[in-house]
Image (cartoon, rainbow, N blue to C red):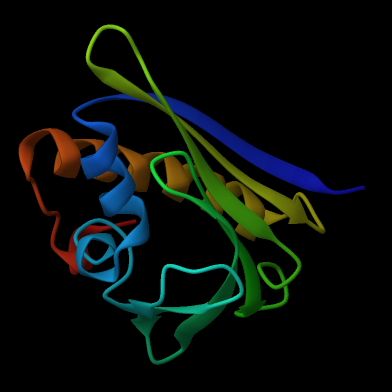
Length: 143
């Protein structure tokens, strides 16, 4: 049995800015990893560096400009390695972006899974604040 994390949020901003915030390393570092490198193309690798012990990699499995960005983890830890995560975006009529986040393939509903679900919620709030207000949470203060 696999376990999954899902979060939906509404972001006030353009779909272009929201897409940049979830795909471009220079924007990702403002709300998620401490450092990031990657090429925005299918089958290319992203490096999500949090600390020397958490220097993780994933492969882009789907990219559709202003619509979807999906990553399959390739080098992380035993809980994250079998997982994939992604962002799917839809533009609303009211000037907002509907962001649907998912992180699937967790082998166990253990402490790490539950903690990651909580952390994603906090980090996605940071993403929302970054897109809407340009607010950057210092890395040391992120969950």
